[in-house]
Length: 287
Length: 286
Image: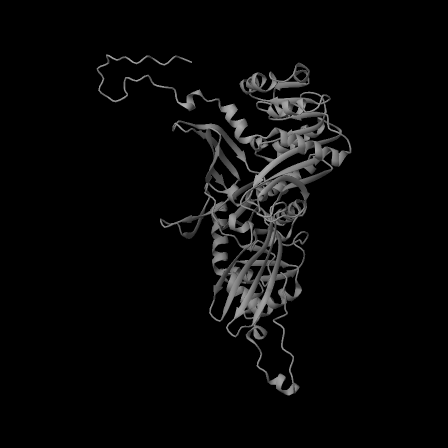
């Protein structure tokens, strides 16, 4: 996860530096990009429940050890271990400061009994070994930072190597016509506004460049707070690469809709669906 | 074609026009291959583009061309007729379509040009014929290969059947409108051409498309042609071409004028913005 820490440029104080010091910090200056990200983008409780359910669907029993690749602040790992006394989590991320933030804010407040069941490890998901997981997840589309197919297959092979014999790999997939061009959406989250912006999509490479920014009531902003330089992998490409990496089978999930066409949060495995402007879903691979 | 029956003036039929001889509709009289060629193909532009690309990349004039999935071999015939030293080898699975091509596209050529065209009823995976300077697979027909293994195998065969400095040229369509269910109409002389994307499945990128023709008298040929494809993406095709042994790939994108309309001029590119609808040539360099 890359973080841009600079905020909107400060005005230079005209006279006394004392006056400048007294100046109240902007909301952006006081804000914590990781905390805002967790509030705006993540829903670890729902994700943890969904992962447990997807595993049960495939294996008819409960998963215990979860590995979270690209774990960032490890909020999902933290939620996972809170969900059961026999659960452990192993999070892997490249970025030390982000892991440290997670250790302080997500693991620190836990009781010792819970905290000892979570490990957040600095490492490269392409090569990092670890305990054999029942379920490994790569969420928030982070695997899209792997832009060539060889790297993607190498990553999938490493996932497979570190899964238990009957382990299951779950990733999320983003798609739809609106994801393949410039687009933006904003959400007022009370106290700040979250903006997702797709700056550029190249149909020749499927390169997708996007940012997350935060805007505050006092006019200050953190923009961009996070930058992504991705390849927008398609569902069949991911399945082909998983197969090449040795996975035995894949399940292409899709969110069920109610009569009004709204997502219900329930996923099944239809053979055929209609494309939408924008969708995300889960892809499951059995080791 | 049966003659229309003469009107029987003594008919007791009251229904207006009921006794009238039924004139055959335009659809009944139409030839779907002729309509297809008029609506979809522009072989002269293809020949011009292929000639330019080969000259640019290889520094000489391309002479022999293989047309995979050649259908009526409209392009093969146009290629062979474009220069006295040019030969064409067309391959298609469907004998009746080839036969139509022999009658309508090949027969009108000079005897000498006819002698430079060979049409083979066979599978493009079998690598029939002699190696050529150019091999082309146009009109997205390779979309019938729905797995990477099948498509790679086809690209491997295509590469093997190229001469030492040969080029493989194919094309692909895409854009926001390519991945949704949509029907688009184009008015042409004497008929309307309708391209229907009946389904597009984002789970596997399988798409089912139809070509329909409609005529001024209200008659129609529904589903004149039906395609059941995997709509591959540009990066996938480039990766699979390289896996099949091609040393390099190039993508040609259509230049637009100030109004944003296509000019028919295709140039090599590495970065483009997505559009509602686009068509690219992809070249595999042996």
